[in-house]
Image (cartoon, rainbow, N blue to C red; front, side):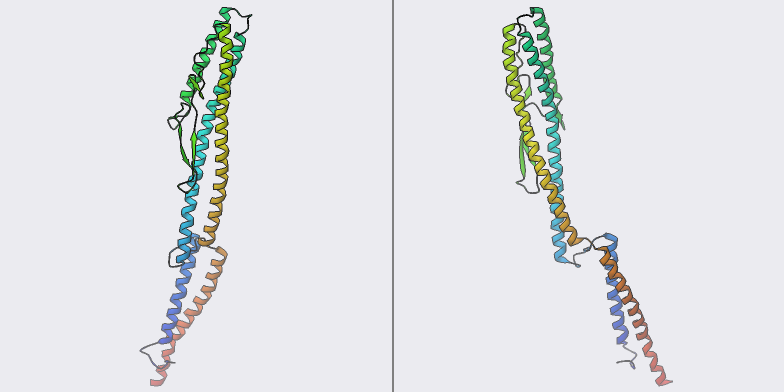
Length: 275
């Protein structure tokens, strides 16, 4: 068909069109192998590209939320360490108050115990001042806010840390303890006990916050993994399949080149008609 016409070699043009198409497909599959992605441009799969972009956005949001949760837990760990140290000091103060309340001690011995308790109360205040995170004091009663714990604008957890200085251990004032007398020491026992209970309550709050954060951390981790799995199934390349397609196309490429060469040679038949 058209072999005896030389101004338009239709067979060669068709072979060239087929060869160009095959070369384009080979290039696409090679690009997928080099990038690891099945979708490298919107024209390859417009719907898949949109879906993958949405999944990528959600995955990034989940990962940032996971970091936020980790930061919140770190803050609570720092605060818990401060509370625990103060609780240990309060236990010691109660022991000293119990000792000073005993009638067998002399006034000078009680005075010495009172000096020791005063130093311990100062240490409680030092711990309050030194327990910080990113420059923010954690135990002064003013640390309160919302932590973003999810990808949505409503995924928040409100955390509030109680004050913990000698004038207000979670609401209990121990700054005025006086163990220089037996009666004062007896009163200090009750005050120290109340402060211990109050501080234990603050530690309980931290434990509940951390428990909730651990649950959110697990949820976010699972959601992030599942989201990435779906995105991968949509966007990422299957290397075995891509390599198989390239091998098939390379064979077709060789066939197309051979067909193109034959089509170009066909007009030579015309020379036999004018020889």
